[in-house]
Length: 185
Image (cartoon, rainbow, N blue to C red):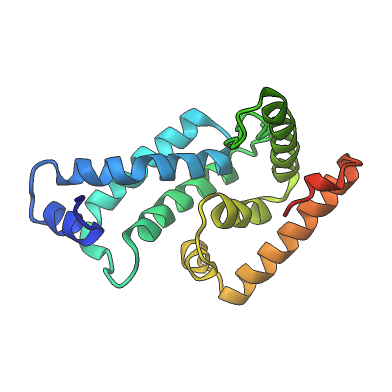
């Protein structure tokens, strides 16, 4: 059985060898994959992920165990991602990120990839503030409260932005295609 998040954090704070490595292994992929969808650059996302872990290690004493560690760590990475996006207005599309297919049929996979490509392209066209909440909610499955904590906005603002982002995404998908089944938001 894997140690709990709290056990790992206590082990890191106690200086146990390998404890921080276990934390990194547990959270590196989810942090990286979510940040790459925000900054839209693999190298930049890898750098942000690495800096987030270094910062978390350096400031672990400030972590509040009343909240999820992953949310706290993600907030560190998210802040860095925002700074990177502000420094560099990135316009690369999200079409390189294929969402997982559940149907093994090659024809079905092709149709799903086309749909996913259109969704990713539509997400890429959204303003940053809407793109971020959609990624946090639908790609990372954060709750509204967790999103509010991560991005530092009131819960009502998060709800409003997610609602608006879904509407904008639906409108974009409706404009780009005559196939209404692509609008599954």
